[in-house]
Image (cartoon, rainbow, N blue to C red; front, side):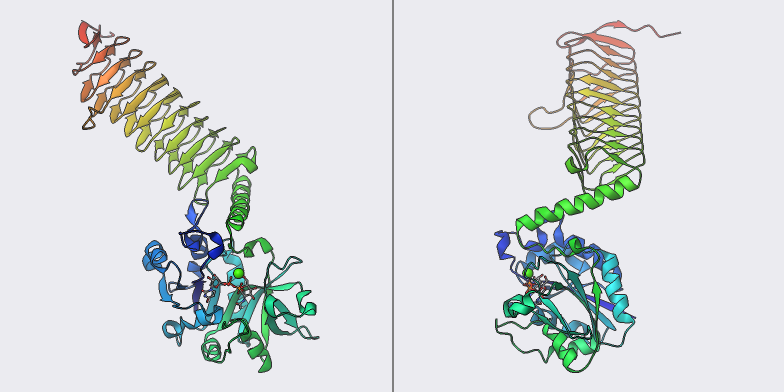
Length: 450
Ligand code: UD1
Ligand code: CA
């Protein structure tokens, strides 16, 4: 059986009090609509149809070709919203799954179950329901004495008796496509001036058609985002899910409540995450690392057996056995080879440090290519910017940079050379040479080890 997916996202989201359309509000680093997309995209061969209204242009820009968009010019209710997709979808798939763009916690497995349930019965629709004593304004599921679903009653229209019903309409449905498109035409306008999608339930019941339901196992999945309070609630739930999944896959998290890991982060076994740590974007950490406390790693790759403490790492590549911190900052394009050591108060940008090189204290390395086993003394700096342009520094294998050396780029320092403490190096240094002073000049040739 084939299924089309329709996502309703035309609502105003007025309670967000925001210029940003609600579906684009970030949740753990990604627009919240992205979670609904990821849960529903694999359920159909074809791209989902999204009904948009408020903020349509920005939403379209954000999702692009992944979605077929239809516009709902006037917000006349959920039934009217679905009608906008009729022209595109009528006569195509066997089933239509309908869900909202503001329920980011919904799991793919739940959606699959609704589709499977609808696929295996004769009736025209399957609805997802949830049992809860806290109705949050949801519609009530009305059943007859035999347990057959008769209607969904909106809170505004419910009698005091109906208000006591604890089985609620989650707002996710799967329909037999032919029945959906012909029945939507029969929807009447409600007392609030809207066309309710939920009125399809009583239409079906009146025709004696059977309606199936799937009871949600985890009510948290159905939290809809209407305010920024809901956004924070959702982010907490999502974080808990991510942390639990990681712990069950062999990662130690000392204090999950203060550990913020984005959904696309991957972490190897026996890595230990200390408190107050943020792992963001598409960061990948290897096995047996010690990360944190107090560390933020964004869009970076970290190898096995690395240790990073109280540091910030952005868009960097860190190979195996590296240790960093406390209090260092790797910026975009930092690449540390195996076994590199970066100690206190180091900053590295667009630079490579070769195997086993060390910069222990107070250094800035920018736009530099540094070989293996180089020692960068305390306070040494690449002066990579002349006020107009950035220039490269090349430091070959085995070089010893004395404390407080200023390396004025463009500059190349040959293999196994040394700079004296406090020297200002303005000219290239040949291999095996010692330079000192301001500006630095050669004082000796190093003896080659025999
Ligand atoms: C709807 C259901 C209610 C259910 C609840 C679950 C109806 C009539 N009621 O309530 O039974 O318990 O969802 O959350 O369907 N939207 C549009 N165009 C519109 C109106 C809404 O695209 O004209 C979209 C919104 O962007 C949102 C979704 O539909 O994503 C739900 O709209 P909302 O107003 O929150 O639904 P309710 O009427 O509160
Ligand atoms: Ca609502």
